[in-house]
Image (cartoon, rainbow, N blue to C red):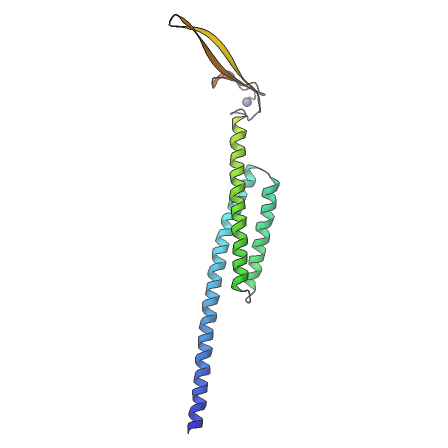
Length: 174
Ligand SMILES: [Zn+2]
């Protein structure tokens, strides 16, 4: 019975081949799920950062980035539905998300810098803008000698006047 043996041998090899194929498919599917899960987590983080950024400054750049994050999110949802989505496609989305993330980081740095600049030039109580920053020189007697002392005088539009950082006239916002 060599023909019969050959036949069973062929069936066995086909079964082994199919089993191997299935194992490869399972591991690929698991990899894809893990990647999608990681992307979802990144996306959640990004959304959180975005919400913070929007709360701080209603900026066009933030708005544009928000739309981009949404489109990546939609695309990712579509990939998740599509069982034929390739690893390359998912990696491509991952890269998109990475670049959106780094743009977000740059934007947040800009916002932080703008806020810092804003706080330097606005009333610490009511955020009214600074009107003038002048230096006044004063002649004072010290130890029998006359010396020049310079004072920094900062005036804000709300009426607050700071002399050397000390409140000389209070903020009129209240
Ligand atoms: Zn003020």
